[in-house]
Length: 633
Image (tube, rainbow, N blue to C red; front, side):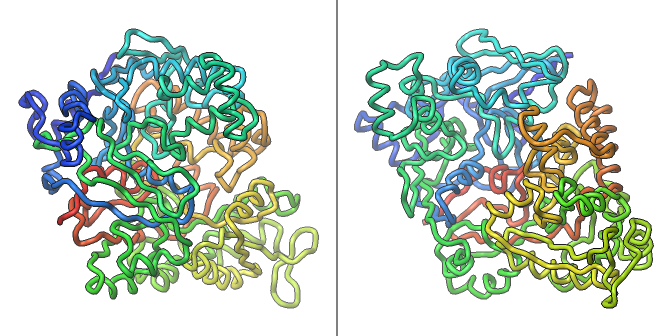
């Protein structure tokens, strides 16, 4: 069965097919019009694709904006250049506020049996430097990067492999290309729409100067020497990064492009004059001239935001900053919105099933122990004390906004029951206690659990202190240890950590067409089973194979979802995975539906007052289209 995803569905959101009614595009930024008048830039109609993406957002309550201004944001390091790319959110296919996937950079995608994907590029779509986007940019990635002996050492991305089978790529013509597999690949399109997407293209016209296959050897050797890197492959890797655009010369398809070479304490993102979207009136987006990303210490970002030094800020703001921010609103000209967080749990605990300590590993793998830890937590107390009663006590699972939500998932082993916790701990081999009423491990050691965090949030610490008091009532002694994030992750990955604390399920508003990979050991950063996740992620080159039946069952279900042949099958597999994930308590949720402070300058328009703040699928601000935000003068 063939189905087509095309841009008309997106345009139709506002009720009218604007594309068919438009014969000319209405306007462009004054600074671009000036460059056109000076002969430094082609006219607007030559910069836009033949069929631009028309964002008819009138149904969302937004208004046609005005051009101009600089949007200030605060980040804590050069690495956060990648965060701007998340916010910009131009993707081959992407999600809008309704969480439906549609073509964006692409004009259309033909999908046959969920295994054959034919992509159609917009005619006349340009990179930010004016070169045309063509099938060659996709062929270059496939042939000259993935299948190059030097550049392809990390192997094929897992989204391009189905049951060990590498996909087939073929160019149909300059604007059409195809990927195909013999079996369905349900993970492929969601990977292209992700906040950190699978980039299956590169600007071939630019990158060939760094590739040994195409570049003049002497010229390339000189570039390698000047860059002080070990060979042309290292230079190519540095120059091609899409996710973290540190190379200001790298052409982009995003609404703004970085023009600042690192290192710097301020990065400037200028408007892309060839950006492919227009507003309901036919004006080219984005409205805002530039984004200014100032790099400051994370711990001073709330104070600087409260002082009015950011026009749009949520990153590094916490719920416990809300009162301070509200008090500063009037004086410094901003509003503080409270968006709902879209995570399965604001703060979750991750028992490490790959712990090095043999005795503790046995306990972590005993479902009775994990269930006991969960039912010994008083989530109502956490909600009232930390979140003023605004959150929802829950296991780490999907929220009511998800069509997959069931109360039984939310309630699984998430109600306080001290008697049951004691019974389960006794059954798990922790019946003996010392003179301080602390339980003893099977080998006689005291049941002293160190819970480790990245040490970045007082909110985490406050919640952990409440949990430590609650676990003490069932004979478990808890210590809280904070460390720098890289050290925190390294300890968890190596099995040195017993229990980690981090945020819960990234996509708690998922539908059955989105990947359920979070509930199976598919990636090393999954702190409950990092070694199994690494094994899958590296295709067996690192980590450890799964050796726990319950976890293997989740992996088997995930692989079945990847090759499911109907939406009903996908939905059924999702429910199986949710039911087992919560019943097995692979992670321990506390509360969800918490609130994220979002500070918005009163000059900044079209930012929704109510929305969902989450990594996936909304890419934080991304699904709400920052290119449609505008600044009043």
